[in-house]
Image 1 (cartoon, rainbow, N blue to C red):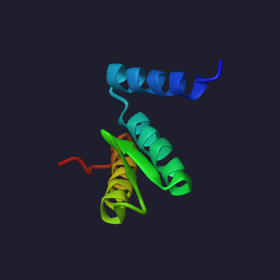
Image 2 (tube, rainbow, N blue to C red):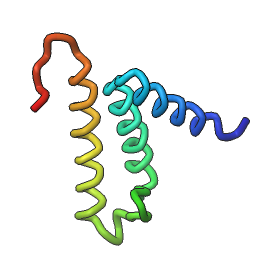
Image 3 (cartoon, one colour):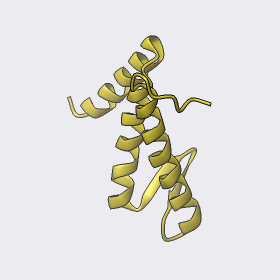
Image 4 (cartoon, one colour):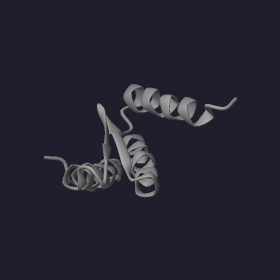
Length: 83
């Protein structure tokens, strides 16, 4: 099964929506961000390459990092960061 990471990502999406687990979205955002550091490209509707659009590339990376942290922190009990 060569696409097992895709199956795991889909399972995480289903679980996060069904059980309202925000931290799983945080894990997904992290899993999308880490490869971008190595490949220097991101796929968000279109492919964005660091060497072609550095501002957009880093804006997406920072957005995903911030969302990762926020989503993980949302599921920590007794932590009130929700708007």
